Image 1 (cartoon, rainbow, N blue to C red):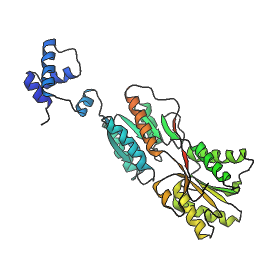
Image 2: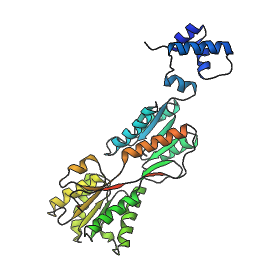
Image 3: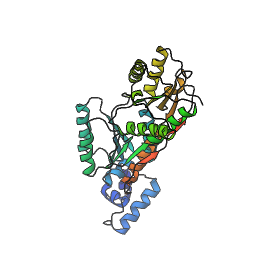
Image 4: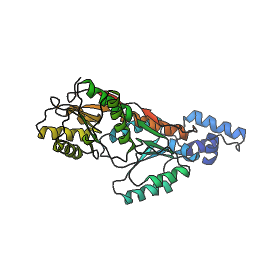
Amino acid sequence: MRVTIAEVARRARVSKATVSRVLNNKGDVDAATAIRVREVIAATGYTPSARAVGLAKGRTQTVGMLVPGLTWPWMGDVLQGVADVLEARGYGLLLNTMNRGAESLTQFAKHVSANAFDGLLLVEPPNTLDYITRLHESGLPVVMIDDRGHHPGFPSVATSNYEGAADAAGHLLATGRRRLAMITGPSQFGCTRARVDGFCATLDEAGIRFDDRLMIEGDFTREAGLAGIRDLVATGIAFDGVFAHNDLMAVGVLDGLRAAGRPVPGEVAVVGFDDIAVAAHTQPSLTTVRQPSREMGEAAASMLLANLAGEPPPDQPKIVPTSLVIRDSAPA
């Protein structure tokens, strides 16, 4: 049976408050009493709970996390990375989504008011930035994961979107493709702009001008990839390679090319971004840029815990690099 602080207090003939003061090295306990309490602690093997220590220090030993939802394909990997670090350090995780809009934000605000967590990990949901900014400015430690909007006021962990897109373009060029199309994410996202810039810069370096008519804006869904291919085919402009800004849209691209009778990779090569689980199981399997989601979660949790331990947050985002995964939709 686990020894309790009450048992230590009984054996040492002091109050539980006195045991707590000894554990926290308070100077208002006389030396003889402190020695007696420590002898009882040693004899019984008493270990204070993490929650008790946290409360004594004004900490909850809990990290909050706010995300748009759990259906994003890479969110599970991010959460696993976060959980791995927090569990190893004795922290709990209080997860909140924005699935119910304003009602969800109200629930999250109740946790904030109750001081239910020591710091916050954030995958920015829509229409929350002003509120989170106020919390951060009031002293709540916050770390952003996948800083899609590029908010320099927050410590953040992101991936190498520019370099990943440049790798996608370089690979397509290396396989002999020259008429390249692109289906992007929403234009307001920083990751979208970085991926467009990296892709186009690589074409420029190769002396190839990207045809803006072959760029379609999507919304990171499979349906957007399918609709984008239909729009590209309808233009009548020739293309022999497609870079989709995430794997879900790339799956839609494969659907659309199949429906249009355009063999992949025979006529058109396809590259995605993320390397979600389905990428290895599409027909053909998807060449893609791997986004290190689990590592991003680990890095963000480590950054936040370091901040809670007194280290100043970094001035620049921590970038976890991407890597190219070559499969059958755009073979080498």
